[in-house]
Image (cartoon, rainbow, N blue to C red):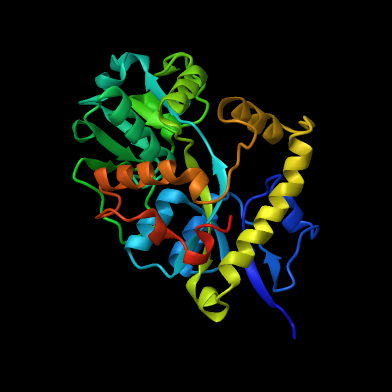
Length: 311
C-alpha cells in the first residue's frame, strides 16, 4: 500500500534538513516539502487556506487560530526559540529611557498577535511593571487570523515599514523592526544578552517562537500520525545535534544556536511538553492577559494526548 504523502511546509533549519534531503523518512507517510519564503507566509496560508497537511506555525498564531476554530492541531515540536530584550528599539527623541517610559507612548509591531510581540509585552509587564493598557500599539500589518479583533488600544498604520515609522517619529518604539540605520534609533535595553540570560536563570523560561501543526483531517485519517510525526522530527533533530554538539559551527545559524546553548544548556531546541511546560503555561497566561485568546487553556489541551509524553 502506498504511504500517504503529506504536503509539508517548514523552514530550512539544521534540524529539518534531514527531513528535506530524505536522510530521515517514515514508513507510514511521505513528505512533499513545499518551500515558502518568508516562513511567516506559511502561517497565513495555513490559517486562511488550510493549505498544508503539516506546517510550521508561530506559537501565538496557533493559540489564536485554535480559539477561532481553525482545523489544525499542534504537536510539541518546537522549531525555533528566541529571547526578546534585544528586539525593542526606541527613538531617542521620544524621551524613553526606561521600560516604564513606554506608558503613554506609541509602540509599533507588525501585528498584535505576533509571537515576539506577545513575549515582549509579557516581559515588559511581569519584569518591569509596564502597564500594557497605557501603551498604544501601532500595527504595520494585519493579523494572520482575520477574525481576530484587537483591544481598543491597538491601532493600524498605513505604513508597513516599522523602521520608517520609527525614524519618522510616527511611533516612539518598535518590537522587531530589525536593524535601523539612524543615530536616533537605539535599543531600549543595553546589554540585552546579559538581561536575557538573567531572566532565564530567574524564571526558567525559554521562549518558544515556532512549532509544528497538523491538519485535523490528516490526524483523523491516521490516529497514529501525531506520534509518528513527533518521532520523525525527533530523529531528524538527533542527527543534527550530533554534529552541533561536536562543536562544528558551520554557519551563522549554528553559531546562533551555540550562543543560545551557552544560556540554556546543551540542547537549545528542546522538543516535548515536559521540557517546556513552564514556558507554555507562562505564554498561555500572557495571551489571556493581552486578550489574544479569550480564556485560559491547559497545556494538555493544545496537543494530541499521545504526544504529551512521547517526545
